[in-house]
Image 1 (tube, rainbow, N blue to C red):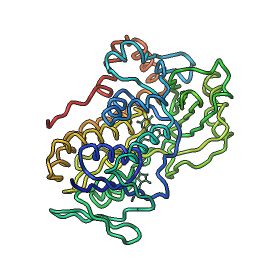
Image 2: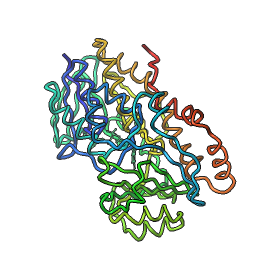
Image 3: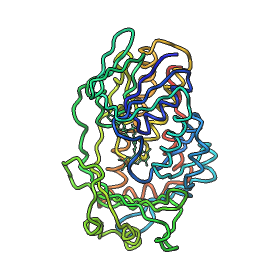
Image 4: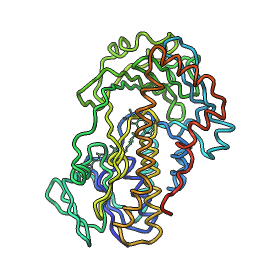
Length: 393
Ligand SMILES: Cc1cc2nc3c(=O)[nH]c(=O)nc-3n(C[C@H](O)[C@H](O)[C@H](O)COP(=O)(O)OP(=O)(O)OC[C@H]3O[C@@H](n4cnc5c(N)ncnc54)[C@H](O)[C@@H]3O)c2cc1C
């Protein structure tokens, strides 16, 4: 039984801890913060995420706290007309075998964390910021900010978009600042009038901005997220922001969208970042996954879904019994980099071509998507939600 170190205890870190422990290894998760937790609000999970969660043994618990939304609706944020709608029941469920649902981020995380806590092969350590790593043919060690050295047989860098492990491994600098600013708010459902209790993920697409809303936490809250491409250059993460600024920024949305927006009382803001895809995620016994490997804009709602797929893929490879971590990590990268690179790219493209176009480009989007049949729409999302086919097994 090998000892696997994981730097970072976000969604990727705890999901991977579970997958690695279930493959028969001991795991030590090193989290820099004083507690294991998740910030932020709602998160959409595609069928691929629920398939992965089932494989990790926690699918039912996550589904229990999720809202099974009925449809994904795309609205024209200028005219107020519906462009298209993808029903998430019937044929969608038949084709993909798992639901599309929305959860509060902490609900997903808590289930994964509880499963880690009850697995005897997993140790969770807080206040343990990893400063750097050393790796040779036999073992790997990390130095914590305190100077303490921790040794293991392999290291997984699950330390997010500003990964310390990636910086040392690839040295490819800071993430790309997208220039897009997102404002988010969570509203108790008691304060939402009945006419606005829509059981859908609804997105209003308008020139250089869009607005999404959906219920979360078993329907107890409404999640609001409004994004504008305002060429922001400063990196911001979760800073409180004035409600009036949000309302003024999105004042030109149609009346119904504004009714939703006005429900938000306390708002926080982020400036979104991502990176170009890369094909190298490992350095001998050290490998990257989750946002450390493939950070993406949230427009395909797939960052966490990809991290869950990563965890399952790595667990499967380790379960095959190969004790050569370098070889396993090379196979993992070969299996995952193409798919996640494609999702990084389509996430940018969806923003430009579907959510933010103006004028003729917006009219063309409406005409094209509006003409799609249900089968066309299912075909469009097929590669995203279908089980990824392993390329090296
Ligand atoms: C606005 C927004 C909306 C999104 N919506 C969706 C969605 O609907 N669906 C979806 O699938 N995804 C969504 N995502 C993406 C998703 O949130 C991320 O892809 C996912 O949370 C990444 O998880 P992670 O564990 O890789 O990284 P993080 O969540 O960044 O976790 C990294 C962890 O590592 C720790 N850490 C960092 N450095 C160190 C160090 N040196 N030593 C030790 N610990 C360290 C951090 O404290 C943190 O706990 C969204 C993202 C954003 C910004």
